[in-house]
Image (cartoon, rainbow, N blue to C red):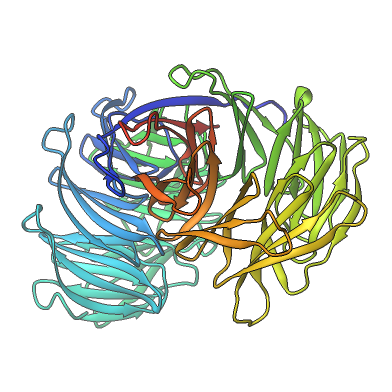
Length: 640
């Protein structure tokens, strides 16, 4: 890379409702949103929808050179696919393991979208779908495979599941609809005549090539994007006798495809959009190539405009002359530059440090949550991603790819670390105390690195915890606390281990405590340990490290990471954040609960602010002053 990337913090303010009692969830009421990762888009006439995380931007492209954002609305989960029909927007949302929702919005007034109906399930994942009239065919990924089911959306306020159609051979599917014909591609192509029998295909054939990614249909002719096999054309007018009638090599990976009046538009990562004249389907001809502002992912055509989705936004092409499209405009959510997920974060000195899969480090000034400052952002290292990081004293400590690296924060631009050392196995967590760094090594146990000389960090000692897989580490006094799971089939699947480290060269185990499932989170303060595991929060008295004793326990659904400040323990669960009053450790009590993004992965607390890292959407900053009174949230999304 030849230049320094700059990153900005985009501020979003949202307000939670009044907290009405312990255990009562206060729902987040969204009043604005900017940015996110573009996932999919939909187009109808002059109306363009762009999915940005779990939000949808409604854009007027009547003037392709000057797209205008009209409104934003929020879906309950990350959007996998969406379509528009007669100014109704249909969204398949969700992620496997977290549940799914099929959501309908009314865009009669595109400046004021109205949520109409929701069909929701607690498990599975809604992926792709096709619409014909008032019937929606949805691909659902489940534990045992995937299948297609039908929804009746004739009453958009109350979508009704009317039946299962079929199982699919894989987890990937694509849909095309023309007239009464529905085409479902998943390894094979299934053809339905909805006017005759919407529940059973009238024809089935193999896809025309391996690695077929998408299809478009016009006048009974199906056009397939077949990656390295280019474009294939099949005549499906007689479903019982499908046949390949033409092909074009497409000079590279053909990934998405659209067709209008016999002209085929194909996205190709290295070239942009290929325009192929297929008015004579037996002899398709490449007419031109249209470059785009970024690598194209998806394409749609409606009327005289084509919309090309990329990781950063949408390019808009004028296709009034279909064989000579012109790039006329583009839409990019303000300050959006995200093409990766977030790994880890840390709060220190009124700054938020966030690492990404692409090794970018983003630094945000959060000293005034209502007035975010400029983000510094850097690409740090080409040799592997950061699993964890910890800024301290102008230095950035990181680990990843079996190595521990130290960077100078004053010169964090395309350079080698000032110090590094190899670590024997995979590190899942580490903490710093003085010159020493304590690592939870999921195979090797406890590793201790001496950073007295930052340019030459050295592994000082280690303690092997046989058959254990520690993934959390905490420090208190002269003890290190390791927690995680057990690698053997034993009655206990989780363990907290206490190690005495006053002599740094000879760490000594003193005691342990077993749990029925793997430990997910750990905090220790004033000889009290707080542990999240299974559906429990356990509170242990570790005054006697040889014999830790459980003194309190609280049932919470699927707790993961935890953070401790003052009298409260903040618990990141699968479906939100639970705030627990631990002023009396023997009697922990829920003080407040509120929703958090289902894809949130970590939590921290500083200055009465709750920081929740969402691997897809960035960093949420929640404020909960005077619990359990009014709960507010400031939401920052970090973008490249």
